[in-house]
Image (cartoon, rainbow, N blue to C red):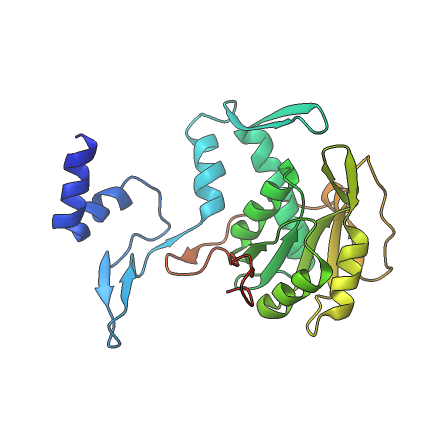
Length: 247
């Protein structure tokens, strides 16, 4: 079936079209209804369905024999470094870090702020949150403390995940001082910060609040994926806030 025909079918019979698409993925519980409308006139997709994004992106491929295939390619012209992860390797990292978050008390419905550069660990953090049913919010690494604090106060996260620094061209941007100031400004600062120490900069740690990413991961037990409702939120993504408060 070509694109135009598929598009036309999705317009003419959306419920049947999306039922066929839903049958292509693996569910813990298949939706009881594909498209429904509540008393307030709001539409709901795949009501009654239970699934897990982390499982679909990782475990499913390993179970289907694709574990040795490349899942992620990281190529940084800034640090002149490259690396690849196959599905088995990425699953191991994600399950372990999900175990870290679980040990910290993070569970389904909790929020986490991810304030990191574009490195593989940022993706690991996103998928680890999804594995537990936690809701992540990625905030641009290097954002000013005031802007980060605004997003913290809106999301009210249980944990903030960050790195010691980011790198822009030849400049090392220290993240930890920005995080510390944002938490000072915040009305609802998380009690836990998990920080990845990068080789370009070592950040100072606040005892009792800050924890080393690698130390925790090395001793963590992997976490299994948690089934969530198809209508549950996966992430929060804020606008830039250029013309007002982020939405």
